[in-house]
Length: 194
Image (cartoon, rainbow, N blue to C red; front, side, top):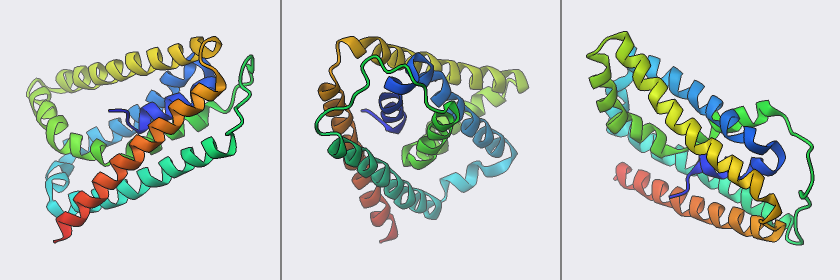
């Protein structure tokens, strides 16, 4: 299912080109490195607390909803098409790095993944010492880097094939899926309150 990182890469690729994937993953990776350090020093049990999970679901769902609505507004404002063919102007790379971190933080699934699957994998890696932690982190980030670089490269190269109208349709579809994801997280969070 498309997630917030994919939405960032789709939204920024026409402006940033193939470098969008690596820039977004840099922001995502820095956030994950901070979270990894926090888990190693004892944050893991806090992530498993039901109150924390409920809060993450509600706040993250609201942030995802805000991101999706912003994307839908962009699509609505550019209904006549977006003029990006041949536009080689590059936006700020830092904006994309920040968007990679922000969308990861906004995604409740990110924290849930780290509290469950990530924590389990981290425990196994930690048994191998610092080398295991480094290998786990680098392997994880290299997987993200490979995927999102391929996506941004495909969007960038496909500018000749992907008309501005189709690009807006793809962005609108991704935003709609984010709305559904946000609603799911908000409903899950509300159920946690009961």
